[in-house]
Length: 180
Image 1: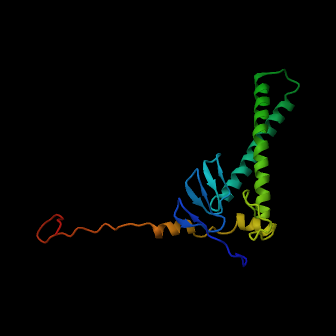
Image 2: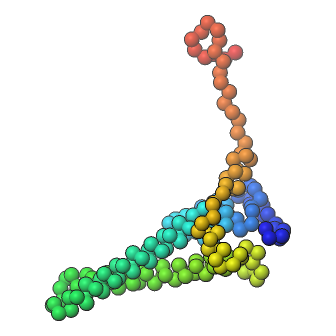
């Protein structure tokens, strides 16, 4: 890629040479193309095929939790002249819990935004990043580029040993299959 030669390390668990940025996830026990991390939120690896969906999940969670906090705050502000009621207490508790959930989601979204902007993965420490194509192009590739075929699955499909089941011939004069 970009006139760089890459080693394709051998994966002992999956039994094939891994392309660049493909790592084996010990939790899922599978090699993941452009592995980013294993998410406990969705109980799945985040990589090339589902990274944009993971970003969409983070954005939608931020919007939902933000709307929940704003709605609760508006309710509490509009009912300040009324006596303290169960509704107000629940709105305050929900606002506090939603704010507590919103802060780590925003932090994760910011970490992923920086990772996309610089085309780095969280586990990479190299100084010269050959995958970086500039901030705008990195975002375009992440969100809009076609996924293409999955080389991991294609290789596995061609490498698995299988034996075809041969049809059993039907003997003439008999209505059922018999072995010859």
